[in-house]
Image 1 (cartoon, rainbow, N blue to C red):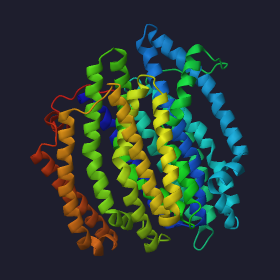
Image 2 (tube, rainbow, N blue to C red):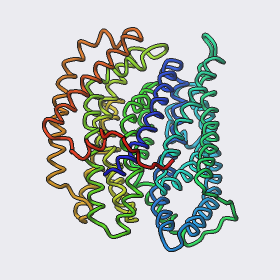
Image 3 (cartoon, rainbow, N blue to C red):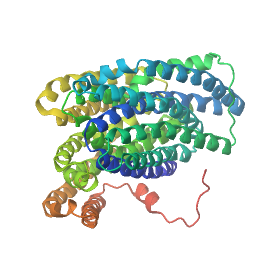
Image 4 (cartoon, one colour):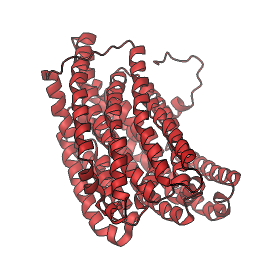
Length: 530
């Protein structure tokens, strides 16, 4: 468990830094743009490359590339075979990215129409969204190369550079917001801010790629561009990527579905949904992405060596860590959503009414938070065995259910119903994945794991009762001045966290080995990989 905790700690810690900068970015964005035409157009323009990034680059490509590259690296060919495979993939991958980006930019009016045809009802909104989407889309090609370079390092258990790259994105975007705000001036056109921000997105891709290229060279790896050639290994990788594109990305595919339905609602709905998802993404990114990234290469090694018991133990440990962190996070976010939304986002052009709706969206979204994270633990159980088909079918089933629920709830419950449908479909996907793993005897719940989670739920209940009691008392403060907002949120977090971990310890919800590794003193620090 020590190596898993170490890797998760590295990735999670740097992801937390990225999420903090992302939080600052969205706080500024809410206050500068509010939830209007320019904000909606930017959110759509940023959603397109960002969702494709998560779906293809960090989703399908990574889950197919890392195990294949790891097998070459640890096989008979060693470094030579791994280097040749990486060069062949880069040579083909680069041209595919350029061609895909060019086609998408040319077809952008049709793509925006498919996702947000109701933007045409507001004069100028549709055309502005098309323009901004073309400005941001080059980011996809740049960040996809970043994902490949990150995969090379992840396969060697060097997780820090890839986890740090998103920090650079958020820093550049914060600069874009500030620049746009300065160019707009008092009472100026909000479109100026949106344009500056979209230019910053593409600039951020260049910055991230330069940093990752330096990190790969620093690790002693060299990549070479050559004439593209579809070698058997590259063809095999392509055959793995195609189904993994869907299987690894149900959450991202659902983002497009949510975007389609959100743009059919009142102006500002898309912005409120994306800002609410920022709160949901904070624990999802820190825990889910960290666990999923760390577990895949480790699980691949155990499976390829035939050590089924170690693979079961690894996934069990990851499952326990995931529930230990996400169950209390989901409950706390659902109960304290008005406090977090008001304290962080309400102000400037973001009104109290916007905040009230956003708080309801947050509560609905986080109902699926444990499922979002657990899916990232269960999927590697298939990907490490190069079974890409099963996640496709479970994802397809969940997506169909998501669309069916949306058709019913969006008209009746608006944007909050849409968020709830997303949570429900993610939970269904999680249940289906586990059922298949269990039937194939690839992973199963043990009595020990089930008992630990039951004890975690007792601690969650105690924490929830306290937060429910505290929220009315804190209402005059989390909407007050800066100092009042800070201390009231700090009080909620500290009190909730303290009760959860104290009760968890008393009822035996914390594994002793896990506690020891999380709290041990570093008398003799182990050698670390940069």
